[in-house]
Image: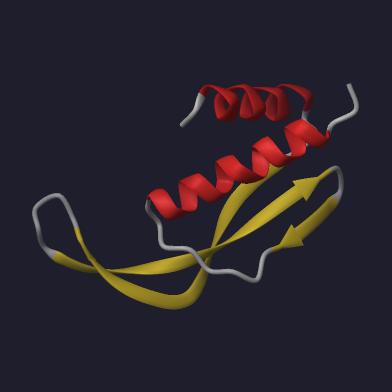
Length: 84
């Protein structure tokens, strides 16, 4: 995670202005765990909670760096958009 990403996430969690979290969907994909054993993992949709409103994303992400990067991107977007 970048320095700006950490700063944006810290701001959002400290001020309770934004929360982004994954919600598992029904779609799955195959992956391997640390022991190199094949496992089935569910893809996730991201949910953005701003105040009392929840916005569910349409995109589905694998539970890896792809999802982490998207979450960081969302936090940075709202951090840059905040009223200073």
